[in-house]
Length: 105
Image (cartoon, rainbow, N blue to C red; front, top):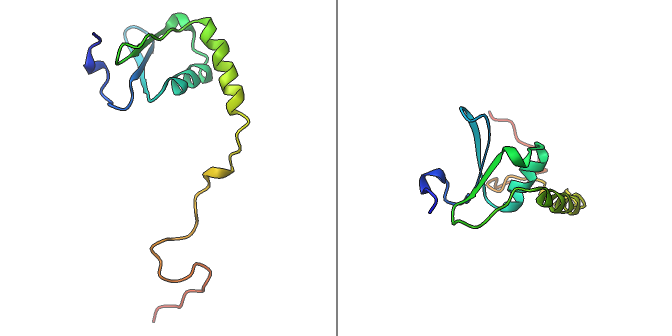
């Protein structure tokens, strides 16, 4: 059984540890896809990584995962980014957004 103190975040069951043994970098991830994207983004080498899963799900860090990761990233690159814009209107405002403000007296 893996020590639960290694996973302080309940919604982040993936743990990645890499870097120097004296001062390692530790990251937690919500899903395996986020973990793979992080590894690809920072070009981390499989030999330098320690990946753990809170519920002891087997995870491998090998060259075969790198190929499947590249395919996943390529598929994600074709998404449109238009769906994540913030609305500029203030929902708490009782007046219409386009009406001019009256100066305070």
